[in-house]
Length: 254
Image (cartoon, rainbow, N blue to C red):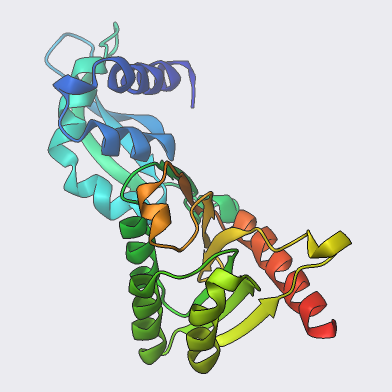
């Protein structure tokens, strides 16, 4: 972006940050802008003022967000009109959405990280239901039958389910059910007096989304002060997938 384009982009971004209550769908606008660029295009057509030209504002949006951006056309128009500054040559004409040019895989994939501190089980359920082909889980404690049922439904529709679970007394009843239904690996304790254990709490969805945090899949966890981060980040998901494979391999050789 050149200097004028950068000024307009920065003004729009800061206005949404500090005056969001005056703009409908401000959070969505801010997210889309974060993956966009601004182009100022001289139409070559004379405007109302002498020797002025009409100028279009093109918002170049990452392709996965382009459809949503167009649905927010009116919201973006209000924002641009408030932020656009005429100079001694141009006047605002139209606001248009265009695809941002793809130069790397980062332009194709949208990364997001959302922290959740309440209704965590509902977030887990929603993520499970979004899976298209795989759900891999590494969990210390699992005794929540509601989450088990959600996994069962997904497997019935063809989703691959793999589970690593710590060999804990409180898991015994659920382990029996998991082993009968899914590919399940029990990770035994190790070290001095078997003190060391699998303490992970993460779930990998379609090798591209990771749920990670303090939240165990137990009814008790729903009453605790817990946290969960949902990361739509393929590179991060690959790291968790490699960790899952490593634990799986070590457990199969023990």
